[in-house]
Length: 563
Image (cartoon, helix red, strand yellow):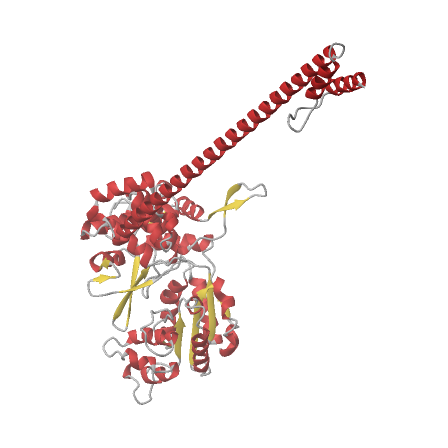
């Protein structure tokens, strides 16, 4: 059911921080305690897990109360605005650009900002009340300025090698905070706190005053769920609210044997409450005044709700603008999320911003999937919250698996991995890819055409190599065959030679034996003839034959008889 059918707008903001003027439920104690700490200590480091709602607490709870107490709260600043290729310190320039949003009608040129120091800029733009150049609107304010550095972990994650400019940045911030009229709140994710150690010596108090913002406990989570709904005339039953809280705090625990079990954790992420409850509200009957357990059960788990929210928004934007869903998904996946899995920013251009028509971007902003921030007259787009990163990635992966061909999926991986040859298509996959490409030429991206061309070229090279290899194999087999035949012929010839030699020797022995026998027979008849026969039976140079004892014995007998 669409939220537009209800008399009241959706009271849940979804995956974006709360803005000034929007009531934040479940954080009364934290807002009060943070205020007291900041007022008392002047310099405070606020840290928390990702998704705990630091920005929401600052904008919705802290800033309004500080202003009520006559503090001059400057626009919350970021250090991560993309570099403008100007000389100077990019982190300081980013801070000054953010502060310039307070002067939309009279912005300073970026070249001038790049040459300024932080305290010099504040003296010009935010002079103390009653001093020359101070606006009349500041007469009833104190001289106390409050600087808020939001998402301050970016000073550490941006360009880890840029130690020199970061050191300079902290030196200027520290010098500014020597003034007792400057308050500062630094908000960052807790896993990056240790990275401040090399720079803490430049800052008064060395970030000694800290405030940890926990995720919502059960009581606060129930307030964050029921409070906004009540303002819109709808209430959760206690059982329904508790079921939702329990669903959102389920954790998986690994057992000693490696198995997993689920349990109820102590905390709930605020951003998950906003996304799930926003989804629940959209599906609620416009006439309903009570939300029951069955309504909660219908929305599924948080990741599913986030993925569905993203998927339906992309499809709706594609239908409304005519921009292909794939273009929108690729833009979100590759332009708003880095390969390391963190959010990135895109500068808005005249009609197309880094590959996507602006007509498709602004509906994403309206749906709170993308956030648009203005700095010095320029607009930057980024994903609305870190909690969206994994659902967006997983839904894009599932969508590609279902809607893209193998060629398209493999080409995308090839492009992301830096064009490794091992990812190119070959054989049957390449043949199928060529058929698909011929039928969908108008749908192909340029990198897909390159991928196909490289695959075809690699296939041709592989085929040439296969033919050369096959020829080498044939030649090798032929050479081995000829060698084997030659060996066989040689062995047969040698065998025949030995057989002939054996037969010759046998014939010679038989001949010698015959002569010896005849010599003995003639011994009594004609001794001289017998002697000649005995000599003929013995080996001689003219008639080489094997030696046999019978021939020698016959010769000896004939010689004795002749003597």
